Length: 166
Length: 274
Image (cartoon, rainbow over all chains, first blue to last red; front, side, top):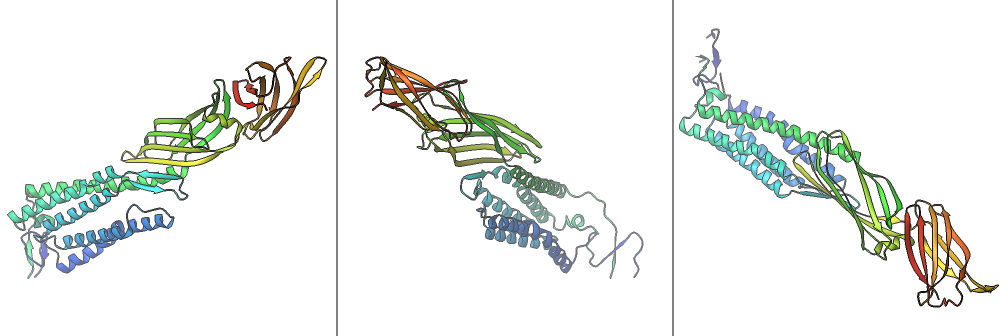
């Protein structure tokens, strides 16, 4: 059957939207992992290793950064794959909540005191205010997750035409 | 079977629009914070590379009986963000750990791409028999402790503490005045007085050291003066005769000395006579 001009052929009729297949979503989620892994794991771990190799004590252990980063990556990936489902809102809340916990954990490590090799000088840097500002992001994420959960509960699939326009 | 789908143009529900707006805000905040963090890290590295410096420190005798150490403290800020509330306090203690003096800088703001130059002055009173008196006649290591505070890039409070020892070369290291045996010639009693010291300071000793021979019952027996022109690192060893008052007993007395230059007069530690 041919498709007329101005119309879109979809594999699944969903009333004006097209939900990508599970395989496609997994593929895109895997591609999204690359920059996310760089930002959340590779870059921080590389920076910490660089600092550590110069004999300067670390503000946070590389293991902690690795674990927190991998947990966030896993949650973010699952959240993306689950976007067309009702699990999306709760997963967004979970991801944002874990991000918030990560920031609270880092907040507990502030200020960072580094002793200059040789021991004659020390520098103490506080980054609490920066982290508190950064907490805006997961806080908003939790709000968005709550709104999405409520929306999905009230009118399931209502958002799908706008999240996955045909 | 393929289906025909007519594009929908209806308005998203309010709750969806609110969530979408919040997502946008969150994304914008995230991008701004990433750019901010990156530029802060870059700027902080630039500031660290420029390294603060204390320049042209010089010590001199001031008119009010103090050794005055002056110079300037320079802090460059080649970064993109201001250094706010910069303040520095330093305490200097002598070799025995006794506080000699303090100095302070700021609080001040150093704007991006500028250099803050702060004059510093430390006054060490040496005229009284206080802890700084030994600076005149004893080489020693001074203990310098400094604390600094500032806020960088609006959100990052910083504090720096520095502790180090600095060698102090005394301008009259090993100062010694010795009195020889009195001699009588033509009814006048004279006594040879020898002054020795080494100038370990960075600048020359110029001026006059005046001595007064005081008996054990505080009577002035006589005195004299030595003219100084001792370069940094030089040694001084001169003898001259002082005329004594008739019958003045030297035993148990003291040699009182003062150093005078264009800046003023500073008493030096007294020496007991045998």
